[in-house]
Image (cartoon, rainbow, N blue to C red; front, side, top):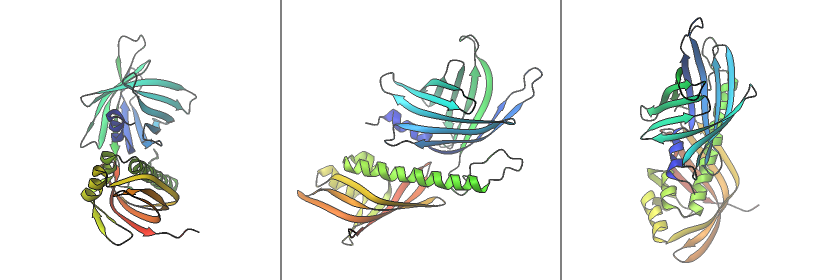
Length: 293
């Protein structure tokens, strides 16, 4: 079961443009950092897959990291692997909005700002585990517009490549598909709070009979026990993203009870999502009877 700590990780989910500076020291000049960070929920929404793709000066650095929460220790955990053959482990805490990442020789302190559209702070390093020295400043800026959210490489002119745009679109589609799966799981578990978190306040659904049901009505039926689901299966799903709008069309079986009567429906569902504040929110759904082939 997901906890509030797991939900706190959702602030990281999405695309980020990364920039930073390693200050000049002695005879070593200032080094600039530029690239991207992406955080993608893994199935179940317990762990984030974090990918770092940056240039530190002229040196390309790529890292893959698993970011989650350990309910036994009460701390977040981060296990990473990079393109230099290195790996490492860190723990993290969030105290009143201040995040602290702690490794064997590195420590980060920072926080979200600007309505969670910026995540910034400082990295420090130690050689003895006691005294810490400033290492670098880092800032991640969220890219909410899928067209502008291109995974920029540190080329001289800062323009995206066709490959970057394709990767951005594929990531968004994969992210939206996972949202659809998580929403279906919440419906199958009849978790009213979780179900509602995927919907906008003005969400409506058009049923197979042509009737329109609001978010409050739909959640009210589940809360009262009039409507319950025991099955939400999909045998075909199509996902398309157009800027900040996404459309998910799926065919499958929904089953459960409505006012004490069992039901099992094979149908098409089409849901329209908008990308708001770093996450996909459904604004409209429509059901249509499907023919079994």
